[in-house]
Length: 511
Image 1 (cartoon, helix red, strand yellow):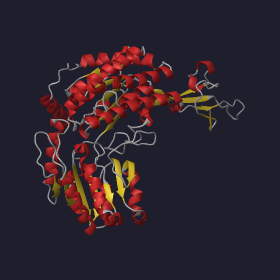
Image 2 (cartoon, helix red, strand yellow; image 1 turned 60 degrees about the vertical axis):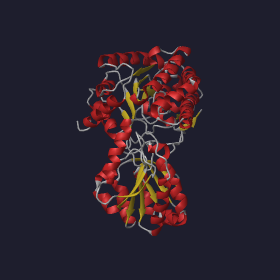
Image 3 (cartoon, rainbow, N blue to C red; image 1 turned 120 degrees about the horizontal axis):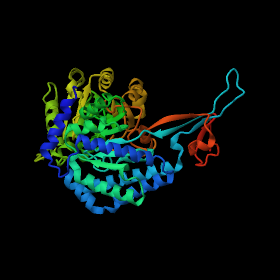
Image 4 (cartoon, rainbow, N blue to C red; image 1 turned 135 degrees about the vertical axis):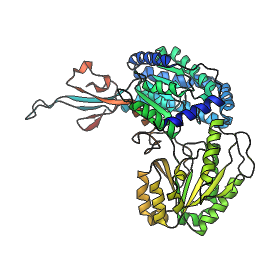
């Protein structure tokens, strides 16, 4: 398996730098955990909408009840500042409450009814009723860069519980104690709401065997992962080796290309540079939507933009990255990129970096060299961005076509720019899941219209989003009931519509 070395290397780094005080789960223990998770799922999926909604709200309340101690511990483990973590905690509890609201509204199950027509010739039409049902136990791998929002009680966990699934979280070793604290809040919510004790379970592990065991356990029904391309692809490969393959929803690498068009570069040079100096270095570049690739056609305006951008980057104060493993990877990948033939450094932060601090960097390369150097297409996770200077629009289009699937792509331009470049605009939906106009990709709004996903290798399945209420659709499947007695149907499909939800009845939306 070609991705296995990436996984082994990752865990060796983790083992070396993090002596977690928590016991590593064995393969036998993981199998037992997944058995208990399945038993809890069979109970939990039958609980009422209101019970599940109250449970999600209670988890949010218990997380908030941990107070400043949770923020302090997360800051100690991740080097993230308290204000950033305060906002992330609010996003996490907000997600839980959003899914509780979604459950109460009920229409997310996509109930549809096609009533019978026994008089139809030549064959009678049966009564058919469809809705979404939960898959079963979901394994969630916590992410290192979001210790709350993409970890123990983050979006994957919240959406899976909302779907009616049980959840087993593998804590990220980089913030194991923070994960334990959030786990304690979920356990309190389980007790308060009288939920099955094993509806949520929590494991630790720094060996790749534990990750493989979680994916390949008989009772695992689906997997959620946020992290590296190598790690996400390895989990996906593990799933295909099962006797019954399961869906793995991995969010992986993304360079999030930003296209600067001529008219806006000419008119807004300094403002654009200031905006992107901030976005590239936000959180020391440790966002999955960090703008790691910039594209523009060669011009004097582009050179002025790079001068202003360099001034902004030079003034940034280096800060500690999440942990030594991420810092080591940033040092190696940025060094490899910067030492490629034809790559020049535009500017680095003028204050030196120490310990595990990252040195913010912007580099420049020609479109021709970029196209001929596959290594430059890879994500450098951290405060780094590469500007690709293209000789003309066709080369810019060729560069954009050469990058693989992305979470985001951004166009910085005027209305004139968009009108003048229709070929480029038409290409954008094939590149990414979210297309921005005159903004920065860092920052993901949690709402129904958000798409946080994209073509491979941004994710393993571009049909889904990891953010917003539609994230629930990763953990469900449709089932059709044919000619069933009304009283034995799920409430969402009964004639009287006791849940009072919107349903598609004989091709018309009704409540």
